[in-house]
Amino acid sequence: MAADEIRGDTAGTAQVPLSVLDLATVGAGHTATDALRTSVELVRLAEARGFHRYWVAEHHSMPGVASTSPAVILAHLAAHTDRIRLGSGGVMLPNHAPLVIAEQFGTLEAMAPGRIDLGLGRAPGTDGATAAALRRTDRLNEGADDFPQQLAELTRFLDDDFPDGHPYARIHAVPGPIQSTSPGGVQDPHRPPVWLLGSSGFSARLAGTLGLPFAFAHHFSARNTIPALDLYRESFTPSEVLDAPYALIGVSALAADDEKEARRQVMAAALNMIRLRTGRPGLVPTPEEAEAYEFSPMEREFMDDWNSNVVHGTADEVRTGLDDLQKRTGADELMLTSHAHSGDVRLRSYELIADAYELPQTRTAQV
Image 1: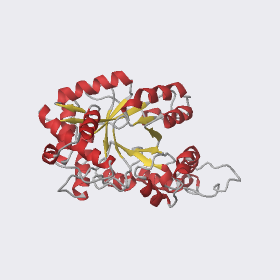
Image 2: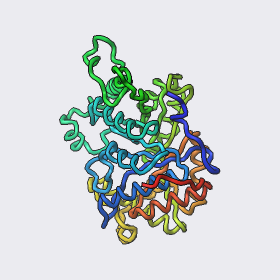
Image 3: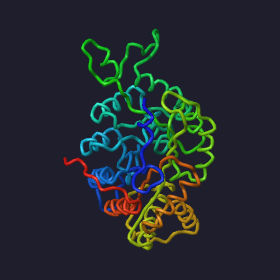
Image 4: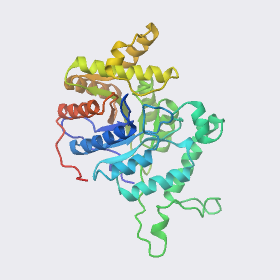
């Protein structure tokens, strides 16, 4: 697998590649259909402005997040783009049988050859009760503990290389390499690069040991960012995939036309997170609702702490904040996620950030 399928090129005046993480957030007064239409507009904007990749994340039982099925959303986005890399950020592997993920992402690779990333996490992407329903077991720790074995199994399905005598040696993920070795086969044996995602040291060490690219969730685990990246780099062993570490970080970033509007938007997103963390998940509230909300002292403290890790403000302020964060962490790529009540606000944020970095205006697919 060529390293350039992982390492991106910089664009404009950005110091590292810039990418997008989309949760397909649903605001109060809007529908999941509205959110997914925004995702199409956003991926087309990202492709036109030179963002390197566009990932969607697996979440469950959260009314304000419509990205429960990454493979389904990615297939839709692939139909509306022709260049940008698309991927999962991530699929929560313990929720699924490895063969199913190999088949889904083999299908995506067939739809968008050379453009698909498979990012994997070991968390459930939801609460314990929902995870138990997804996995049809309440022994959730076993799924996380078995992650390295599940990853190895998934990789063998993707590469179609179970050893002779293995129970799965005669089972093949299709579409996949088996089609190129069948009589008359012309199937491209290429498969999506695997990334490990994490918010602690476990996946950082595993990614380093296996020589895989690593994506860290700075946007909700900022205190662990530098320790995890250090652990990844210290643990790194060169592999057929990478000869040197490659780490991206997910960053909450929101740019607006003025600083006051940016503060209003991130306050609403913080209120949504407070409700989620206290067992009251809902749609993303409007800025007006957040302004009228009476925050308790504990909630106010949480909001201030949460928003201290959201790079927000005018376009120039966001650029300065992102550049400073990249220098502090040494991240090889920044993946930006914007949380706001309105799809228009999110689209405007990415446009402003693209302008701040002088990203090019290119033509995207007309579908």
